[in-house]
Length: 553
Ligand SMILES: Nc1ncnc2c1ncn2[C@@H]1O[C@H](COP(=O)(O)OP(=O)(O)OP(=O)(O)O)[C@@H](O)[C@H]1O
Image 1 (cartoon, rainbow, N blue to C red):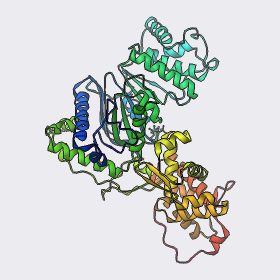
Image 2: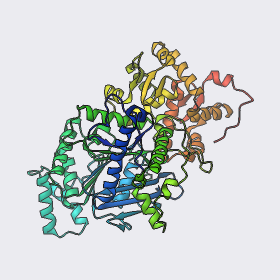
Image 3: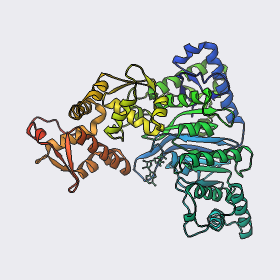
Image 4: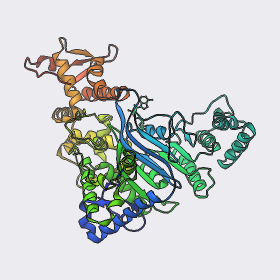
């Protein structure tokens, strides 16, 4: 895995001071000047060196592909991950990018279809990794067991003797501040207290690696903040019986406030797009320019296209080739793979032919690297899963005269990136905004949309859909409807003949819902809920042409 990022940091220069370690190239190189760039590169070198040399590797995963069933959609592809002692690593990325799957693989709950996971240098296989413990978003407590019994469960599963597990449960309950609640049942507890039980149960196992799957997202903001800061304090004071933490999160701010390393995944298929090392001192001040600069930076990264990331990666390689430090850019996990293959040429990776990347595409698609290798089937464009009303809402928050960056837009709308990105995607797909380098500008059509009546808005959306190549699903639905004898088709036809060929069942359902919502709004077709059928509006039926093109999936 390369440490690759683009460097289009705005407002605050996160490169100055001890803030972020990343390889930064591209446009910002000229802004910082060659010396500035060298400094950043040297720091990035140092970090990569430290990661490789320092700390005992707890986990090393080199995953070629992961899917849940043979022949089903690939969830993760070519993902490398290394976790060392003493670090908190956050996995960030859109829904479906495989964050939880990657965590489950590390925990031994899912086996990669092709690839290898090593725990302290030994291959993990055959079930749960006993060195890990998981904390789930939904607490996953047994309602008929008391707090103490729930906390003891993990130890029981590991066959730890009764007296020892009672002691561990007592210690964990004490550490996590649950004393006095040992005999309470989950239903007597608030959400925050229930999640404390989740934490205590994981800690009682004394895991070397604590795996947290969105542990704060089901809690209200204040409870989440409280528990988050307590966890961090325990970690810093070395009161947790754990050597490293891996956390899945949707919140950029949460990741920047906790993580030592942030790994950004893209989707379709899930893969690593970028990695950022954060060394802001704890406790991190969310209002500080450094913190906000870094948060901004991650937003910018997320809004970068694959082409931009790839360009940076190429530039990093080129620069590394010119300097003596080239070996420090070799990703340790790729080295591991090479050694396993019996190849010891450590510079081979640098000379590896690079895959051409998708040059364009909406923002969320940009989160998944898409190769244009002709042997790989082109991916079917997915519709951003948002309602048109949200797009209209976004337009209201944009300044008519100047660009707004995604970070500030997210703050204004109080949205996490995972919720903001598809809305921006949808607005771009409908040609209502202009998006460049993480900056959003409302365009003339967007301004017209805001001033229009509902009927005019519908026609603007209709035109946007008809012009966009990314609205292929709606276009194909229209073709099927026009071809059908009565201008009606069951929704299952779209589901089975188009969607399931390109998406997982869950994503297929989501895509169908979005297509129906957009098609209805734009009055392209209607939906009859009782029969589950889609139908053409009268005017469409009347204009049906004999010369329609063939439907191709
Ligand atoms: N047990 C399973 N069986 C089949 N498919 C699964 C299973 N678990 C996850 N998937 C699929 O794998 C893909 C990745 O899911 P995963 O939960 O790992 O992603 P994620 O990035 O954690 O998503 P989210 O942020 O929404 O939790 C999704 O398409 C999901 O539908």
